[in-house]
Length: 330
Image 1 (cartoon, one colour):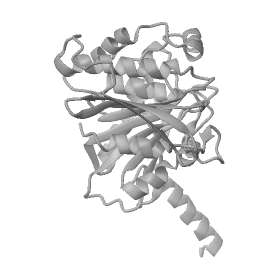
Image 2: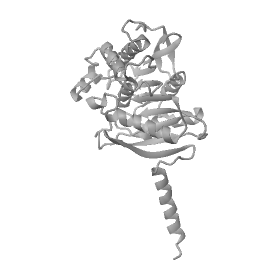
Image 3: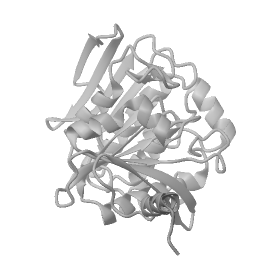
Image 4: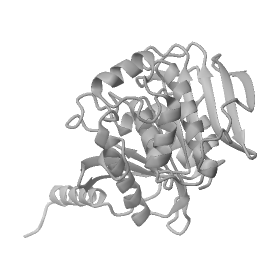
């Protein structure tokens, strides 16, 4: 029987949808939608394949973790990360926290099973990374993770427990590893800072990655007027990762990586936002960097103002994040 042109068009459209969902490699400059499942559950994801992608050329991979009340499309729009990926040639993986697993789309960072290696949500995200590596040309030495708010706390967990996977990370308006271990504890930590010692959590983070003898470079961004996640959490994240790196240097808690910054400087963005930068270098390498954004609340600095949680006055967090990442190869 002869098919109408309308039927053929509908069939073609259906085939295109099935192709995208199958996980088959996409054309450069496009989205791939998929999901990953392991013993700990299932989550959807979106992968941005940048313009200029060639299967034979291994590119960096950035894992971008959205905050509460967000999804991958919204975080991509807010951060303009896909545009940066097109310009600099790297892949971007956006895991998605559906309302089925958290009513406000927050990552469940306060649950014990989500704070360990090979368990919970961290294992699902790393499984997604492996999925991307199996289908696209990825430079395993240049896999990074960064997020905002709840996504930033999950970034801390991933950096703590999978330092063999991620070459560097970014914690934006978030908190340190195991800042809270209960739902009520997370509310307290957001309001007042964690009750736990960053030094103790630094040791816990080192142990979670099986006590590696290498450093974990981290960029921390936090507004000084953040009324959702108290700015003390940013300082605790710095301290925790410096302690983790102190162990990573030589396996001992001996202040071989000092807490005092090696350089402090200030600046002003083109949008008029003042900021203070503290840098912690070790053996000639920028190990931890913290931006204290003066007067900024709970936001993504430099974000697209048409999206929630944007502070368009900058400085541009996406540029800061990528500039930090590309200094580090695992």
